[in-house]
Length: 94
Image 1 (tube, rainbow, N blue to C red):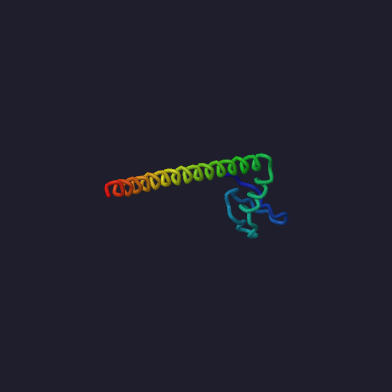
Image 2: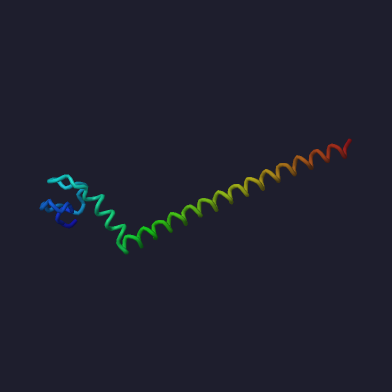
């Protein structure tokens, strides 16, 4: 935690950098600091890294979904093959 001057130009209050709002003037400190951070090169890099991680997580979920579907399809195919074999055996016995 650091003490900073309120980001409202006319306010002279010193506030925590973790404060949501300035207690003196009500300026939204947290929201403004977030905007400043996201506009900075470091903030953009962090945001890009976060977006990459989210993309990778999404891709992992999609891969897992595809694998689960393939396994389900294989089980279904094996079940149908068994039914087909049973029907063929019954026809051959007749």
